[in-house]
Image (cartoon, rainbow, N blue to C red; front, side, top):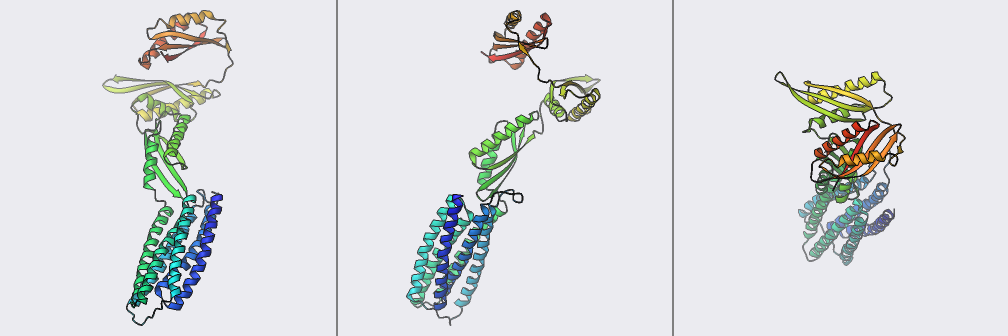
Length: 459
């Protein structure tokens, strides 16, 4: 809000000074019949309109986003800057045509009184101060409208000096110098209008800033969990940068994992382009090398499935034909009826079959999603189970020690949890096989145990 108020104050002072200069140049131009001075006067009149539009742009651009303008109103500044371009271009074309006409007309008399020369000198100095002041305010507020006004005033410095030299040449006897000066002024104004217009059109047409686009693409592709950045779209609206990013991640990623990946992309983009408003869409990778992963992804797509586990894929030769047999467990809402669970199993099997091909057979087992169950820590009451598990665990060569054994009673069924240490360089499969052997031995020796969970830690 302070930046907006400061920008309006700067624009207000610039408008007042411009009105005074425009009135003085019109009076002197008419009195001297100098086309160079009149070109300066008309340029200043355009400046009056341009700075008045800056007021409008700053006020409108500061409005927050609403139901009709989801991206805010910041483009109003670029629209005003483009309007200035059209005005500058029109005046430059008119001056150019009149200058060409005067070069072929010997009857035009141009007067060069001292006050005309003094006005042009003073105008150049004032334009320099105004351009510097507006550019400083534009950088501080990141205002396209103020920047356009500053560039306009910077152009006025050159045109004022050209007009001054033209009048000095006319005073020295070269009557054609006034028209030549007007040609130079109109050309400079036209080039300035083109540069200003191109910048404004780029923003209005949502031209992507290439340097920032490349940085955002690289940041998105390098975010944790992202396999590739598929599409990145960037647009500028005033001081705000918006980015729509589509990335690919693993097919079996959960909704929460996909959300974490999206947040990671946002953090990486914020590092290279602070303040960017980012929307991230996460898509699954197109292909997967693992049949098990493809089965999990296909089954998880079915509405009503909460979790897919215990996926087994068996490949076998049936009379020279390669076939697949898939078995899996899927968890669903416990309130489903048997008929609804059967229908869910059919839909899962259909999805997996479409994923792997019609040559695959799929058998799905539906089980209820467990609810929170009350439990009681009975570790102190069952030291026999603690000793038994500790003793059995260290029989495995992969397990170096067993510590922190916990026994929990949930409605008469015991769950035993143990933390063990193993070498950090052995494979997960090896540790898993060791844990299964320990679990089977404990279940066989103690029927009251319903589940054994072994947590591995590297030594």
